Amino acid sequence: MNSSNFAEDPRSKLNQETSRISWRELQRFFASGAAIAVSAELDLIEVGFQISADNRQQVAQWLQAEQVAPVSDEQALAWYEADTMVWAVVVSPYVLVQVAEKSQ
Image (cartoon, rainbow, N blue to C red; front, side, top):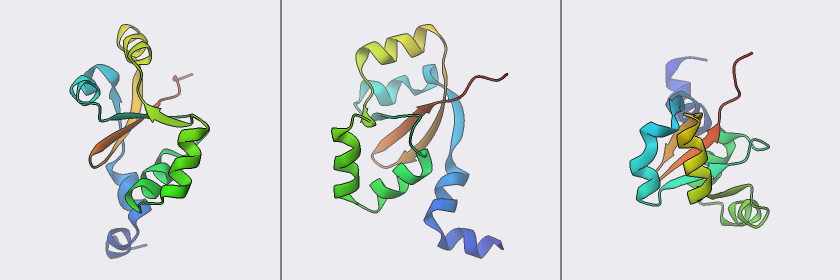
């Protein structure tokens, strides 16, 4: 796949924009209510794609199943205290985060 194909595929673009980052570095997004937690059961890129595509039905299902939700105060504090690493991708106006698996 050449670079022009990446530009045409929104999932590939999101994948390239995803990074592993310390939760502590995302505090300003949490404080503004823009940090959204994505369950480990879901594919972070697919969630980002569905949000960016405005697939309200799918997003509503994830919200109802509590697989996608704003990061809670308790969750944020636990991640902060543990210096948790997360995978993050920006899907404006949100930053989607998913706990990164610990290295073996």
